[in-house]
Length: 305
Image (cartoon, rainbow, N blue to C red; front, side, top):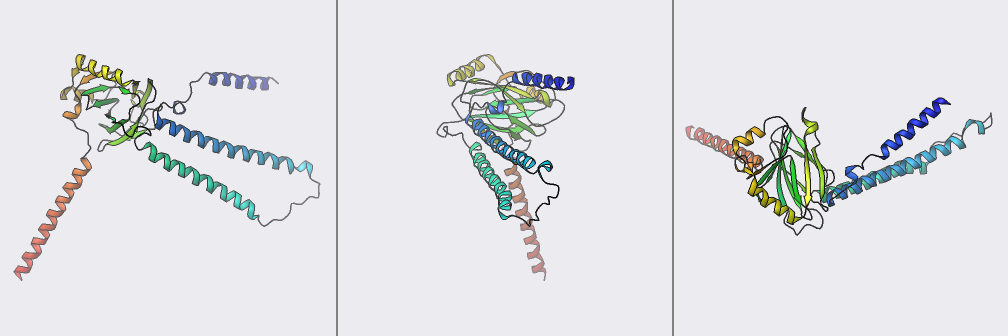
């Protein structure tokens, strides 16, 4: 009896503790991309819940109906060589579920990889988000501003993040605005987001990148376009310009607080947006040069004969 009361008390304490937890950020969307992904998550949870409930009901029915105490002692189960309807259900239902979830996933992937719905006709705010051990650098090329470990964005305007890294692969993630996307050292990936509501949001690196990974976070503040413009003007009046030597120091491994500069590091350390194209062009030139040399050698051999 004491064990039962101890177990009951522990379960009730756990329920009360979990009741005080904050809601999952991914299920509290503040933008169209995050809302789409939250709906997909809830849809998946709902389908899985129905499957679990149906299976448990069938299991309980079979355990009760065919329990040993209900059957006579001389009972022998019938020899059945299969049932086509049972087989159709057991095979067909999973196929339909997987096909439906695949359709939803592919459709959602195309939606979240493009400009947020309802913002197609607006000019996006372009932000270059680069990571280093273990901090985030945000460059606003059009505004001529750079921040470290914090991000200011306007609401009701599309956001276009250009992601890359000055170190290992990281993952840019603002749970309430959208899903994560990788930032790599030799290429730029693009992430489209938007914020429908003003507020404070949490952002972080969602990919393990060394001992300082846990603190590799940044703060996001969404505000009206007017407030954002005022912040831009204030930064130009108060912040110091960023220099190449100062930026090199910022790239050194370690943790920093929030910092603000005028200008961006893109002027002297541009994003690797054309790295692959340049490599491909160089490879093509080398190939053409090699082909030309081989052709010349063949002509020389023929003239020798």
